[in-house]
Structure formats: C-alpha cells, structure tokens
Length: 289
Image (tube, rainbow, N blue to C red; front, side, top):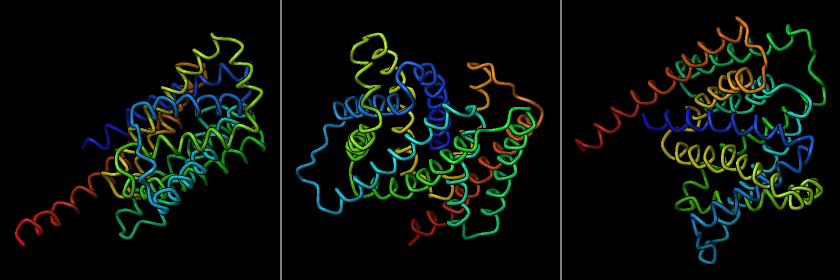
C-alpha cells in the first residue's frame, strides 16, 4: 500500500517542519514564516517540475489557481494558530475539515464507521488538550478551524489538479500562487529573513520539511486513493503532531492521547483495507471483461 507509506512519511516530515517553523516565529512572525516557506518551496518545485504553463488550458489554470488559494489559506491560518496554541491540539482541531469531507464523501457504512473511529480519536486529543490546565486561545482555535476548511478544499481541488495537470507542475505553480497571496501579511518577515542569511537557511529547511516533501508525497497519494480514504489517512497527521510536539517541543502526551493514537491508526488501516478490498473485485471484473 504505497499511498499509506506516502501519507505516513508526509506526516512525519510535515510535523518536524512545523516544529522547526515555530522556532522562527519570534524573528519572522507566523505569516512571514508562511510566506517564506511557500515561496522557497515554490522555487524548489518549479526547478524540479519545470511545468509547461504556456500549454495549459483555461480549466487547468482555474484548478491550479484555486489550489493555490487553498494552500495559502490552509498554511497561513494554521501557522497563525501555532503562534497561539500548541501543535498537537492545533492539528487535531484542523483535522475537522478533512474528516468532515471524508464523512460527506463516504457512501457505505464501513466507510462511515472508520470516519467515526477517527473522530473519536480526534475528540480524545481535544479532551486531553482542555484537561492540560491551559485553556486554548479562542482566536487560535478560530484560525485552526478556518485552516481546516481550507484543508478540505485542498483535498477536493488537489484531486482535480492531479487529474488535469500532469506531473507536479500544478503543485509547483500553486505554491507560487500561495506565496504571492500571503505576501501582504508576510512581507515584513520575508524582508527580515533576507537581511539575515541564517534565517533564510532555517526557512529553507522548514520549506523542505513542511512543504516540498510532504505536499509532493500527498499529491502523489491523492492520485492513488479515493478522496474519502485520503481524508481518513490524514488522521495520522494529528498523531504525528502529538508525537513531534512531545519529542521536539516538550509538550506532554498523556493516556488519552495514547488511546487516540491507537484509534486513529486503526481507522486509517481499516479505511485503507476496505478501499483495497473494494478495488480488487472491480479490477478482476475489468480483467475478465
């Protein structure tokens, strides 16, 4: 199941990148970090993909532009939330977006069952965050919910970009669009980084870990599995957020978080296995037709 491996590797890279990005917040601000990592990631992806944009149709451009809007909103508001609330709860709350999308797109009882199991895991992560004795900043929660909405849009539009635009050219241009869209709020941070090369080096590391590697892997996985399965698989991301918050930022992981991890992993495995079992009869039918 290569898609599962891609999502898992994406989650690991993304959370380590987010933890690194938080170290840049005091110097560049959350929007400055967001803009810089998007632009740096766009530069790397454009060099690798070399998209033939002059041959794109109007529909291809429309999908790519909307994809850029989704990436800008998802990243901008999520990083703004990280300046206000811990990494683990932020990802757990943000996941409401793709989890809701997975529930809407699910058509069979077993799909809804796996979505429900993932939802229970997310709820346990949320309960633990409130029981930690440190109430979450309401504005940080709002930013995270907005990011979750853009995350759902990222999944829907990303699937269309993957279908309409070959290779990773669509992803590369979408990152450039996202960087331009966040520039008005992140210009001060970008200017500060340009004046300090060591900040640029850290920002490049953040861009690679939290943008280039994870989004390339997710984009490839999104072409291999249905959108509702992809949404459930992304529930591995809050798990990795809790673990990386514990390993890198010293944020506690309690019993409820451990139980939530097992539930999310079970939901992701079950959803993937159900999808594989459904595709096998269809493949066999096509082979005998």
